[in-house]
Image (tube, rainbow, N blue to C red; front, side):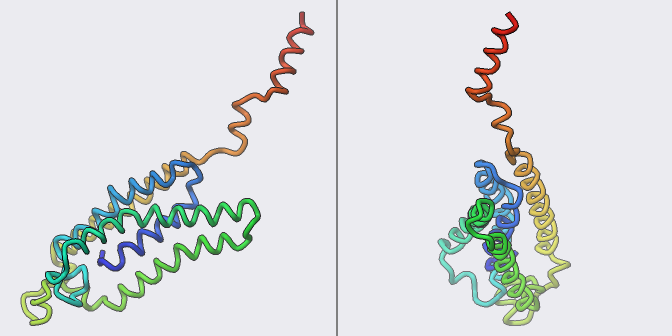
Length: 203
C-alpha cells in the first residue's frame, strides 16, 4: 500500500482487533502481526517501487534511507499502538468511568482508516499507474497498475494481511479470559474450611 496509508491502516486494524483481546498477551500478538505480516506487506512497495509508494509526488531518490527505515518501523508498531489505546478506552468503559469510551475506541479505528481511504481516493489517478518518477513525469514507459507485477503483488499481500488479521483475531479470542474462571479453579480459604469440617463430620 502507499507509504502514507500504512501507519494509518495499521493503527485502525489494531484498534478494531482490540474488541477481541483482553489478555496481557494481546499487545504481543499485535507486535507479531505488525512485524511479520503488516510491515512486510507495506515494505515491499516502499523498497522496490518507492516512487509509486509516494504517489509520484517527488523523486524518491532524494529521500534518505533513514526515512524508509522509519516508515517500516512505524508500520510494524502501528497495529500494537492502536490496540493498546483502544483497549485502554474499552477498559474505562467496563469499570464505568467513561460511558463514551466505546465511541472513543471506535473512533480510533474509523478516523485513521477513513483518512487513509480519503488520501488513497484523492491520489488514485497517480496510484493507478506503475512506473518511475521520471516515466510518469515524462509520460513514457508506464503501465496500468492492474497489469503490472506491482499490482499482482499488492493483491497477494492484501490477501496476506486479511489472513493475518483473521488469525490474530482468532488468537485473541482464544486467549480471552472467561469471567470467574480463576475463581472457579482456585478454592478460597472458606471453601477449604468447609471441606475439612465436612470430612470430620463423616468420621
